[in-house]
Image 1 (tube, helix red, strand yellow):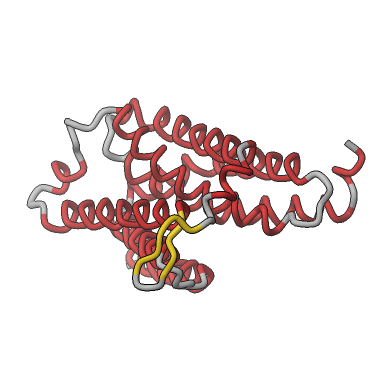
Image 2: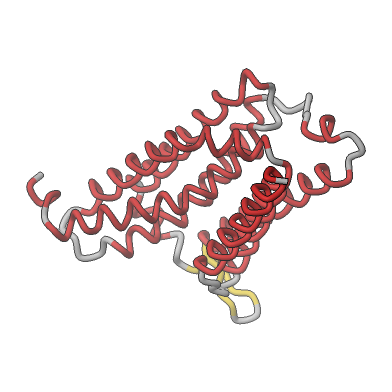
Length: 239
């Protein structure tokens, strides 16, 4: 236990926790979009269970780290490009995000009745949780493989990775309700959040095809767009 409190371990824990919180923004936004389609009395439950699924999926992948790392091994080759299990998961997860975000943007912008567009009577809590779990696995796989590379050289990295996961999910639980409510109250922010999911889906598909696009560019662009939207909302309120 003493090695957990060494400067190297604490620095790795801080870095990993920050990474998990940033990557968790994707989860929170996706959960916010889906939870908003449920009845009001089920939204908090969906949000909490969705984040619980995120921590469980990441913890399982950390404990099964040997199997996860084998997913990096090529399964087959197409046009001289090798594809691994990780690549296929990223591509399928990215395509799902692209489809889901495009579908929700279409419903939000083309539906003649905005209230009806937000309602989804056929969507159950279990259906929402199944979709959240699917995306959780994709995001978790990416973050766990990144965490392995960042903790390389530590004598016992598993406690560091598990601690970072639990701390980051606790942070997300504290702020997720405010984020969910804020997105649901402001249609323009909801469209921006869906656009963010489109970009994340594109990143995942590109990464699956071995085309690395720095995520910092996407996060900076979305933060800038959010800042402009907030300034616009403030200016409208003052008028």
